[in-house]
Structure formats: structure tokens, C-alpha cells
Image 1 (cartoon, rainbow, N blue to C red):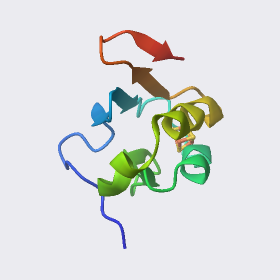
Image 2: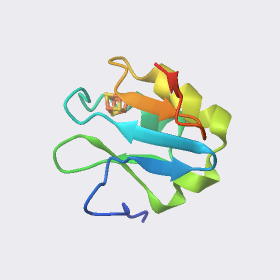
Image 3: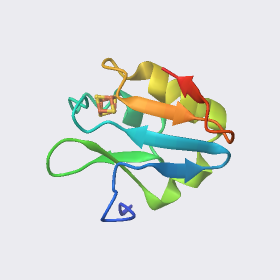
Length: 88
Ligand code: SF4
């Protein structure tokens, strides 16, 4: 069973490759669309908010960006290595 990392900031910001990914817990409605796209990156916690898995690094940057695009409430925020927000 996969386990969530970083109990202090379970929803990020989390570095995945060159991307920095953050789930806005206030926006997240637990739709789990992100998990369908990137099952190694996220899991829902007990509050039905997306948190990062230890295996998040195994997802490609393209998949991470697709997971953010899949979120119906645009709760997944992605910054590139320069700090520029690339999604949403
Ligand atoms: S798709 Fe968006 S709303 Fe759904 S669990 Fe993921 S971050 Fe939360």
C-alpha cells in the first residue's frame, strides 16, 4: 500500500522533477480525477483532499500537468523550475 509523504505539508508544495506542485486544499473537492490520471502521485486523505504519495516522482511531468488539467476545480497548481506558474 502506498503511503503519503511529508505529514506537515501532505498537499505540497511538492517537488516532482522540475515541477513544484501544490494542491489547494480549500479548492479540492475530492473528485479524484487527478488520481485517475496520475495514480502514483496522489491519494485522498481522511478529509477527502488530495495528498502526495512517495511515488509521485515516478509520474512524468506531462502526466502531472495532465492531472492538473483534469481537476474540475483547478486545485492543482504547478510552477516550473524558475518559479513561474504554468498551470492553471
Ligand atoms: S482532481 Fe482536484 S478536486 Fe479532485 S481530488 Fe484531485 S485536486 Fe482534488
